[in-house]
Image (cartoon, rainbow, N blue to C red):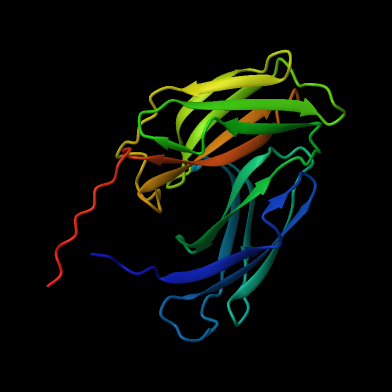
Length: 239
């Protein structure tokens, strides 16, 4: 039998993405579930922030107890160390041993890329089972080609944001890479809720080229894949 959560709440961060060395600021709203008004009955809450990679909790970087106001609010300031690991972090707010609310924020090193990436496909629309050809080109902003760098091309489901077809390789001397996905078919696993008008299914083709620093530059476009070349419609005769 489903049991309602004893607490409800919200966490607002002043921005979704920070750099190492920044001051992260959150505001937390808490109340007991089912209350129409804040009654100030939540006297203590604990906040924990931990590194979170693909939903797997990692090292805790912050833990502190707070006393919410009479309206169930409190503010958190978290200084992010200059050497803090980049990636996703999860904020967890607990009342006693019960988690009331959680939220995520990211930490990234902001660095302007030195090159750009472009991506083209041989068509915009395909029939399930056809080959999909993807051309990737990359060049520096000062004009020369990016060569001998790793490139990854993915066909991504819009339903779960997960790739179901992937090709990897290296840019050639002219900064070019071609990926061919042979016999790319729709399956029950990759068409769920990806429906797009006229019985087609939309997918994101995404290419990323990795810099020597380890960061990637992206390019993408949408394609539509149809289950078959023809569509049959049956209409009942009107009386």
